Length: 137
Image 1 (cartoon, rainbow, N blue to C red):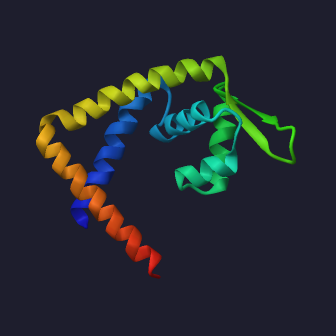
Image 2: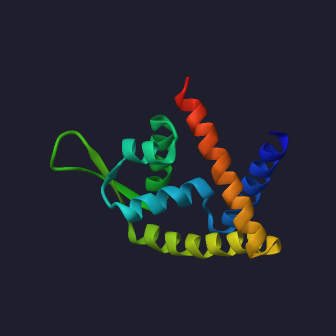
């Protein structure tokens, strides 16, 4: 387990370091991606899809809004507040997409295609096993 934990921390550090020059964290970029995929998405849905607490999402959305990257608007139905990208948010997302592709290439290229495929297959199997064990509790 120590190796998985260390690998996860190393990947997080590398990814966040790659995003820092454009003023985003990897988590912020991921939320911008969700908003782009589903304009008007509610904070609760972002939390569910990101496996993050609603409170953390509310804080992040507030920061994205303060930075001018997203805006929140009341929806016609009920009390739902939808989140939308601003033009600045779309530009930042495009920059983030370039960074994401580059950091993914840097992290995976040294492994080679076959090794990477094997590692990803093993990790996916491991996650499936953990999820099935979690369901038995």
